[in-house]
Figure (cartoon, rainbow, N blue to C red):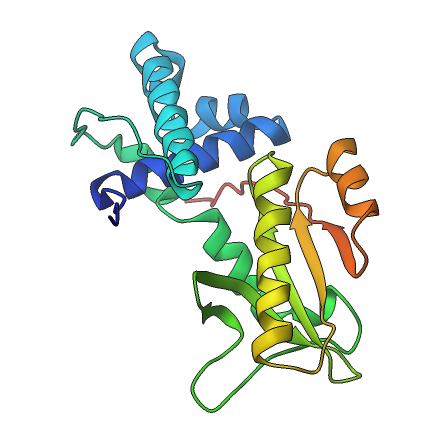
Length: 210
């Protein structure tokens, strides 16, 4: 049986990731003061919890669990409409255009029918698939959540698939994350050919004079 995620919650999932990211960077309070004063109300606090709950349900869904039934929430705070984007998609697209930042000489894989961005394979899609200066494949997994098992497990499956189906092995892998826990470092230390990369995001605003 195939269970599909309800697309009506997609924007709420994105908002959940935005809130988690901004809180992790310590800028959510400033964001609310300047752009989302509704967030400082009791109703706004409930809305924040709802977005984080939907995001958590979505991550459970990706792990193979059925998300809990959620009430439809058609109301969209106007001040959050500018944040209707997937953080992972933006990071993926940026690194796809600047993949050499991860490693000198690294290039995005290109074939006759696919680019190495969201590279489709059996049972999933590789966030980024690159080729190093020696012609070896490099599998890149983006990690927005804090869990270590999911990112590492996916990466190892993708690396195994690439070795088996594309050859030139053994390939290497990168996990790109904003937060790198000691647990993830420990897990990676036992996996040859896998490296960790931390990314940083700056948030700034500029007042445009009239």
